[in-house]
Image (spheres, rainbow, N blue to C red):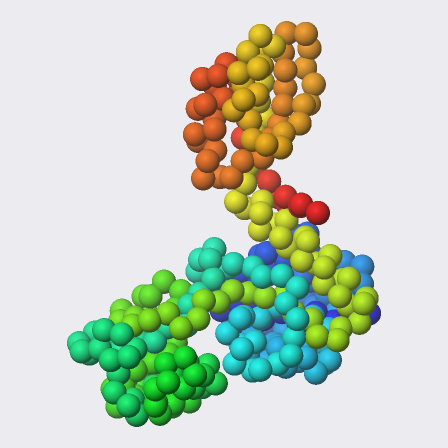
Length: 288
């Protein structure tokens, strides 16, 4: 049976919401309990861990699959295989960035403007070293930070290499983004030599999570049109649509639309002759 590890910290709540939307509600005795279960065949238990620990736990076979960030997979160097990537973070429906930032009054405008031996504080010393040594070919003193990284400037560091979602934390600490070093997302991972049963379970979980994510970005439109207007209305439907039925005088069809295009779609459908358009929220949109 399979053990799944989910992240604590900033990814904890959005991950639980995603699993709930996917029909994989995580059940536990208390909100801070570190063991849980989901009603899904094949997953025996659910545990929780820090995102920085999860790649190693999966790679070492302590757990079978887990969700963690791109940043911690690279930082840890753990040998894992990505089953699927999901774009979300604590405060946004997108991923996050690892950026190099300096005080707002710093003269540097690019990373190359920083002097040799610049002190850079970061929770990601491996990524920081790789960025400066291999990508910039520049000397830097990496100060390993274990939290409150922004506060280490200017006394302990000249710059920071830190995660950013909205940029508010940088601004509140009088720092400005110099360059994006990495773009990150949540990744569902298994060990590189995962058992076929584990891999199959991971694929099933990924399918349901993808369906839940896709549903938040789409809506279902039910379109009712007179038969003599149907040809014009049909031209306004997306590539994939299906007939629900109707009668000799009326045609009823359905199609899915991206939310950002729903308002325009409704307008075009009614202008083409539709007499009724009903928008319905979706729980899952699964594409095999």
